[in-house]
Each structure stands twice: as structure tokens, then as C-alpha cells.
Image (cartoon, rainbow, N blue to C red; front, top):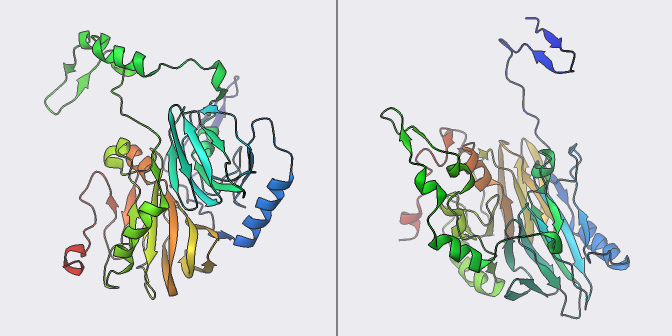
Length: 372
């Protein structure tokens, strides 16, 4: 069938899509950034002069990326960030959010009145529009992996980046005062339409949204690590994943570490092989310890400690397997974002139904039997 395209005087096009088949989706291939390349880049960053904001960083760019900024998965940026001893960064305001893991050294992380020490394998989140100062108070390089949703916002051309000094934001006292006052939307009474729950709401409901307490949270490795022995010791017959989610209560039912990503720490015993499965969320694994192999869209790939693996392009059939040691890995996945968009499809095995998680009953593992 011929599809007509009309171009108007103002260059707008009207494209006839009647009967046009759905576009075949393009999968970015699985790739591994090896430990040696990461370590080499760390040393290179440490050798260059510090920029004005103190942020020595390199973004990992996937070969298939054609977006306006680097991305390791569609919509996901991973930066290698290096601070030398005694250095600190300047705070900035961004409407992107981040999840970070320290992979070398240690440093102080400060936002507002909150300061904590970040050490190797600690994880923390940075909410949108939260200024943070990083300071290396140790004797070694302070190195972190920073995962953000900046590529998605850049693709939409709505990524706000500004100086803290130029920003006017309400403080906690202002928020407390606002909470004690009558809201304008209280006068905008909802209007029921029909009997199925449809409503009409006034403008006030668009610009005065119920808030959640979104704050920076910290998961120290020393507190997380002992609990991993539970999943490491699980029977190989367990049908779930040997992991824990680093949960931020502000994400509520989306079960995230940030509002865009979840971070999980997995510790797989030797000889564990996942069933091939797929999901619309994309996943990136940082191998903290051990080694293993994966099959992604039919391609076999191996990885080991210190590698950064783009392990699951969205809706790609994949599975992972541990070897003689087992392995420990941080996984970042844009699962909460897809739940918010009602686009999280999940197929636990290739014989299982395709589920829309968050709207349909989810997958039921055999945890109660293997944990008994």
C-alpha cells in the first residue's frame, strides 16, 4: 500500500499511516566495558586538570547511541567520576536523578545538613534538583559510577542544569508553612463524570500535586553485604533471582532506588543458570566480584570482576549464568520509569504469558518452599 505524505507551507508533514505495520524495534547489542578500560580511564581522568566544577568524568557511550549526549543504554547514562585527595565538586541543580556506587577509595557526600562517608561498594541516590557536594577526604582516588536519566531528558530537550546560587527553591520551613495552610485546590471540587470513576478537575490540581518525601538515601556496603549470604545460600531450584532491591520508600509501588531506576545487589551461588526471559526495562550490570556468562538475543558473552555489562537491552531475550565462584553484581534497570508509564512488560520464561506488571498480578516464585 502506498502511504501518502503531504508537506505544508510551514514544513509540517501529514503522513498517511493507514494500514502501516508497526515499526520493528531496534535492539542495541549487548556490550561489555572491560575492567582494564575502566581502570585506564580512571588514571587518565586523574591526570588531567580539574575543571571549574571539580567534576572529572567520562560518560560510557554505546556504539549504537545516536542521541544528543552519551548513553550506555537508551535513556541511561553511566559516568566514571574521579576525585583526587583533597578535591571537592561544586553543587549543581539538575532535574535528572542519579544512583551512584563507589568503586574505589572513599569520600564525603553532602547535601544540605546531611553528610555521610561513601566507601567502596556503597550505593546512594540523588533526587532531582538536589545539590550535592563530593569531597575526597582520603589518600586514594575517590571513584564512583553515576547512573542517570539525563539522556532521556536530553532527548526530550528538557534537561535543566543550573547553578545553585541562581536557583530559588522553597526550604523545609516554607514547605511546613504551606502544609498548614488551606490549599487553593480545596476550592476546586472534583466533578464526577459517569459511574466508572472518571472526573474533571480544575487547574489547581495540575499545579499543586501531592508531594512525597524524596530524599537522598545511603546503603552502606558494610550493612548490605551480610544479608547477601541469605540469597547466596538459597537452593539452586529457587525460581526467582538471588538479589535484594535497594528500596527507596519515596518510589512507593514502583519499587525503585530512584524514581527512574532500581538498583539491586545480586549474589549468585556457583552453577546458577537463569531461565531465558525478557522485559521492556533495560539493565546494566557492574560485576563487583566473580565471573559468569550471558546469552543476549542469541549472542554469547563472558564477563568478570570489574566489568560493566549492558546486559539486557529492552525486550531482549536473555539469561545469565554463574561459574565456579558465583558472582556479585550491581544491576541498574529503568523498571520504575516503565511502571509509571504503564509500559513494563515482563515475560519470566518464554513459555510464560506476557504480563503488564503493576496492572496485572505479577510473577509468583517458589520462595516459600525453598526457604522452608
